[in-house]
Image (tube, rainbow, N blue to C red; front, side, top):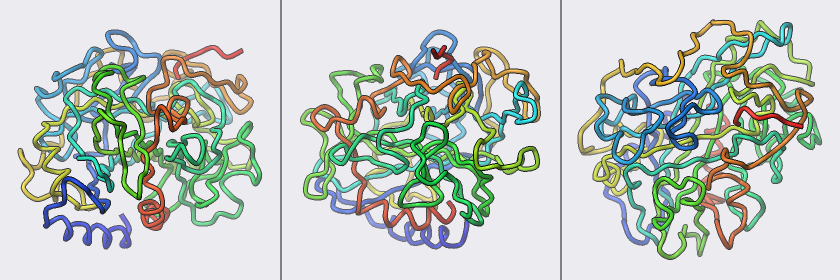
Length: 425
């Protein structure tokens, strides 16, 4: 972490010493969940949210509680023997599709990109609701695992459906210089990604140049909605979540829905370790997601809550440590986790080793997008209630607009330090 972030974290840590308002909440507070090591709990074709009880359609990398499996549900995670999170009473699971390097000189050669590190931000935003802990076993999916189509909103982030289609998925690529730019000027997204108009280091889709910023390689960014519908239930990931609307600067969930924390995944991948294996040409790039996506548009994240609800509620109500991390929250029930050896074998298949060279992606997922197999999209089973397709209409599913009071301030330090296997016609 660079000095600017550490100074911000220190300010957040001092602010955490005072209890926070619970009813009408007029300030944005947050705490970052860190993990105990820069390795995943497990990896493999497992997804108990979308493909419960069977093999998933692509390979995933998973963090969190050790009771993760193909049929994880309800309170299974609460009895995990260990967790990779720094808070003992968080046995939730957090996972994403794994990133691979496809050798430009040999397109039939793939290597897994190692994790650099991962964080999960927990935002507690201004609201006239009471923010409550996730119900145990809540399943969420954000993003569309089957799409290869550029987002309708363009390269920027949009978490407010009143201003356009939801765009909660981005890639961040800090560079020493943005000359040439990370994305082609005036790209429409069909053959290359699109730059965020407010940040040269961010955009939709994979960037075309090496991310050589200090301590900040390629980063996968995924936001989740924060209104839970108890009538849909914890397992119905397609319909159980929506984005709150902004009313007089306060985040408001639909009547009868429960306001839960807004979580944000940032996953840093060690892409610089491959910098000597490709030469950027401004036309193509070598990274591909495990579902075969060469565009990066189908980036997505899954979540199952394994939080002890009293612990999470305490953090919501009393902790504002910012980037210093939840391990610095005052009086955490259960305490801080110092177990750095939590790992499990995959329930299906074997884990791909670092530096292992494969002749195809796991499960033989074909590489598609940006001229590789064509550009296609779909919602299917790979799209949850947090996807842009299901969350872009204010009347039915409206967004957590962190908006002008949050992201302009966070963007300063963020910019500094920052599918499924499917046939396409």
